[in-house]
Length: 98
Image (cartoon, rainbow, N blue to C red; front, side, top):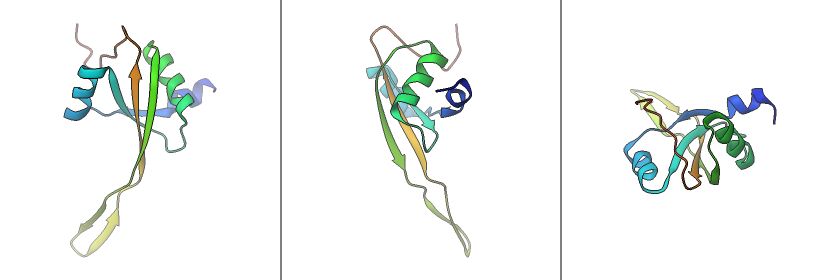
């Protein structure tokens, strides 16, 4: 996988109450990734960008919600979520604190 693709695979970390509890309990982090990203690509991207070792990657396709605004109906885009579990002794800090 080339460097350009690796930098584009991870779109953003998912920071929510559920993902924070997962990170505290089992060193598992959630990311929004490209729709066509594979597990090996996600593993390499996380390992290179955050300098950690990945134990396991699980992916989930999230269906976009149907929304309406008055008489206008629409739909949000479908997206892909990746749960990445790190090996013992590794951690990712998103807050950037000391």
